[in-house]
Image (tube, rainbow, N blue to C red):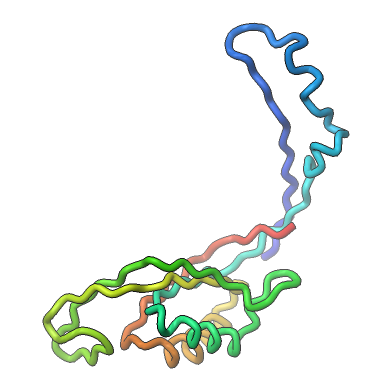
Length: 156
C-alpha cells in the first residue's frame, strides 16, 4: 500500500519571557521566501521489509555481492542500496549437535561483526527468495543472525 501525506512546518522563534518586537523580525523568512523551500512537500510512504544481518567482516563483500545478484535492492532511481555498520560483536556458545564455523562446542565465543542492512518492498515471496537463495547459502554461520522488520520508507 502506498500512502501520500503532506508535511507542513513553520519556523517559531521565542525570546524568553520578554517581548521580541523588532528584535528578529528581519531574520524570520516569510513563507514565500526561498529559505522555506520545502514548506509543502508531498511524500510517498512505501511499506517495506528492513532486513538486518550480522556478518563477520571478512565475509561481508561476498554476502553483499550474492544479495545484489539475487535482488536489485532498488529505491527510487537507485539500486543495490545497502547500509553497513562495523564495530558490532556477536556472542554465542555452540551446543551439542551444532557444527560451528567458529568456536568450540560448549565454549562461549565473541567475535567481530558488521551490521548489514537493506530494504525491499513488503513482498513475502521476494523476501523468502532473497533469504533462501542469497543470504543462507552465502553466510558463514550455520544459523545466521537475520532480522526482518516491517517498516515504512518515506520517498519524496
